[in-house]
Image (cartoon, rainbow, N blue to C red; front, side, top):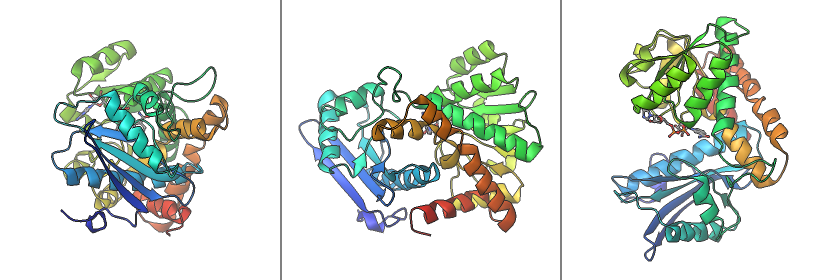
Length: 349
Ligand code: NAD
């Protein structure tokens, strides 16, 4: 197996730390991409990988994404990400989480963790027994913290409104058709916000019962998961998985806008060019889906309240506008423009 710096996704990461705690069964990777703007912040993913090298690749890619996301949200934070390698049965114990907390603590605050896929607020509480470099803890009183999903959904909703204004010239979402892929925490919250504005909704989820229940609640339509990306909608909103925009799916898109929550929606850099060549307005995921990290970051920094979180989330459309404007001026794909702005912000441009 090669060293971390030989991986294709190694991007001058400041550090890649491997942990093993035999007693609890913990195997984990913590990747620090950049601390230029502050402590490297980003969640912990709990996932079963077929190969350990896939976990390292994930940590490398996701930590760079966090550098970009935090920079684009004007947060005083760098980018990092942790991955806990789950066994096939996804066994997770308090001892394992405590060992992980000690691993986080050993970095002395250069890395700050929070929830990601497979990790809950309750898990953060266990990790916090061993380290103070953790966020996403339960909100106390009117303070910030807790589940970041509603804040992420709010940012996506505002980003969709901005995209609809730019691409379709419409100030309101009434009658605008949005197809949402994935009706989980973010997709579900987003669908409710959109329905509140009178948008027409088409929904899909591998958990068909979940999508149907939401469709019944909101008067929406459900389609099969393999049909959602090619719905004749105004907006496609990927809120499930990464890499859904690729050489196979982009030619099938019929909507003029793609704006959703899923991280790493583009399978490759080329897919940003493919969307652009088709004239599709794309909201780069790490710009539009920053609502959750804004909430978690203000909790960690100990600044502000829910109003401040909302004020900052309301600035997400401004950053999207900057990306789209520069894309229109230069003729470069929005995805590439966003990368360039983010790299400049972290001093790598
Ligand atoms: P979630 O697990 O609550 O929901 C995801 C939903 O997608 C589930 O209902 C799942 O059944 C469904 N799904 C999985 N594969 C699918 C497929 N092929 N087609 C249709 N549906 C499918 O997760 P979430 O918290 O809502 O996050 C959604 C996405 O947004 C993820 O990619 C996540 O990384 C990203 N994201 C989430 C947050 C947050 O605050 N939760 C923040 C930033 C980014």
